Length: 191
Image (tube, rainbow, N blue to C red):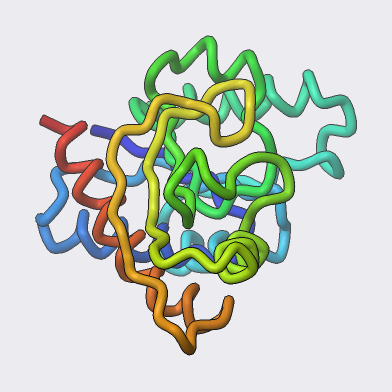
């Protein structure tokens, strides 16, 4: 299985997947990393580890249709068979979704359908969980569709919300759960 990772930020999921591939825990390889953020630590990590990478964004391609086509072309060029959006803060375009049907997945830091949709990412999700007074949260891996966080759920993992949790503590406690869940889903999909 040849993975493509789409990331906008620090790339912790990328690093976790890379370690799983390198150790043999995951029978896959990373063919390309794409980021819409030219200063993304995910791109720095890819470069430092010899993984092909591209900065593709509204700066490189102001027309959204041409940006989608450029992403799709890069995925095809590097032989992606499964696309993972992990902290990717852009909507995946219709051309990419139609070229990779059922082969684009996302990890989200809540128990979807709760706390998903436009604008729900990072600490905003954890703030919403705390504001709602929820006693549990978790992580979801789902298929990507044209609508944010609406695709079929593949797997979820729950995590109790502690009385003294705040968005930052919740994010820190949930990240290892997200990492483990995503790699386990990738293992299932690779079989």
